[in-house]
Every structure is written in structure tokens, then in C-alpha cells.
Length: 257
DNA sequence: CACCAGGTGGAAC
DNA sequence: GTTCCACATGGT
View 1 (cartoon, chains in turn purple, yellow, cyan):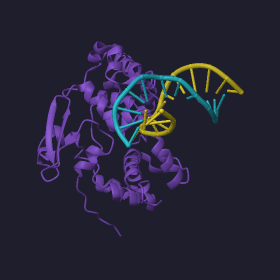
View 2 (spheres, chains in turn green, blue, red):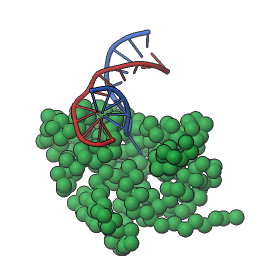
View 3 (cartoon, rainbow, N blue to C red):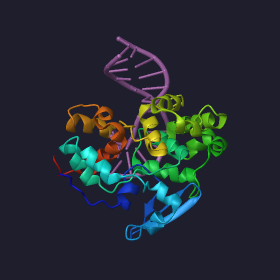
View 4 (tube, rainbow, N blue to C red):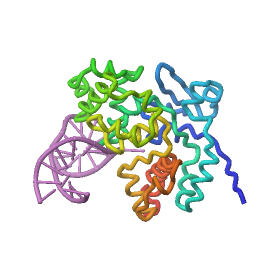
């Protein structure tokens, strides 16, 4: 028996689940953001600006078969089925690779609120700075923007991209393990940041970022199993669902104790 | 005023 | 190989 679940993009979940850091909503549920040189305001009630525009349709990953993916992930067990159902509507955004890389470098040993704060300051309300602009800001300038000890990390990423040691276009064509190793040559980029950059900036769904939350999830809900092996080509999506489910339900106060 | 946050590099064992 | 720790800074 095939169970068809009704699927609808959930704008708030998609933009506020911790994969992107530059979207804000007003009290009426109007979401505004800037991607590259494009800006958009959109609401759950009217997603047509997304559906009818090639750029935004791609950004919101409208071409991917989420209902099918949910069905496939659900077959791995009841916990995953529940998490996918709870998180249904979250799309994995096709973010700018450079911005995603920087954003997740900044995310380390940091909280989401302050990650947003720093990225907003870096962007000065407009475009996210290019590698060259980061170099121009300089390590001291980055420190003044509140990056803390991550200033050197972002600077080194900018330097390596600028010099061509890291070729973002080439990364798109490389297999995941090679791309991971390449990204890890950046000072301050380890397995977790590399996998976030590849998942959110390069749409590599087999990446399974292991942060403190996902370590808890795999230990508590999956008997310490390897998420990458368990969820395979859809591991990244599974991770996003489980991350959201963990934070908003499973470990939330008053739930499951 | 302590303690924490979508980790990582480096030293010590 | 593994474990421990400093790292800046804004929020609670």
C-alpha cells in the first residue's frame, strides 16, 4: 500500500530552520531576503513569486521530489517517518556556495541568533561580500564586525578562493569526499562545516552534517547508528528533518521529557 | 555574573 | 589513535 501524503512548501520552516541566516519576517508573515543580487518578499499565502520565477524556483528547490523523498526516508523506520512528517514542507535551499561556506564557518561554537547578527553586519543590509571584499575588510575589520576567533577562518577562506586554491565551480564537479578534503584545507573548516557547505551551497544530499544536536539524535533515537549509511543519498535531507524535529519537538521542554 | 552556542586546531597523553 | 582545551562575543 502506498500512502500519499499531501505536501506543501512551508515557508517559515524552510527559511527559519537554521539552513539560511538572512531571511526575516514581519508580523504579517511576509518574508524578505536577499540572495546574490536578487531580493524577494514572499508569504505563505502567496508563493507565486517563487513558483513563477526561474531564479527563485531554483533557490527554493521546487524541482525536487520531496514527497517521494519523504516516502523513501520513512521506510527506514518509525522515528524517521515521524520526524519527516513533523518537518514536512522544509525545502533544502540552493544557496550561494560562497555565502553558505562563510555562513557555516561563522556558525561554529556559535548560536543561531548571533550567526544572523554577524552575517547581517557583514552584508550591511545588501549583498553578501565577495571573497575580494572580505580581503578588503581584513582580519581586523572582521574582528570589529564581531566574528571573534572566526575572523581568521573567514579571511583564509576568502584568500584561498581568491587565489584559486579553492575553485567553487570546480567543487561542483568533484565527488563529495574530494570536495570535502579540498574545503578542509581552509583554516577553520572541518568535517561539519564542509558538509554544511556542500549540502546547503552545493545541494549534495548525501552529506550528513554532524553537530552537537545530530550527535544527540543519532545516540538517542538511532542507537548510535551511522546516519550517512542509514539514510544514504538522502542523508542531508534526513539530517535537516531530524535537526528540526529534535529542536522543535523531541528535546523541547515538555516533550518526551 | 557565570554559562552557553549548528566546531576546530593544537597540544598532551 | 583519543581526550582536553582555548577561542571572541552577544544572549540569558
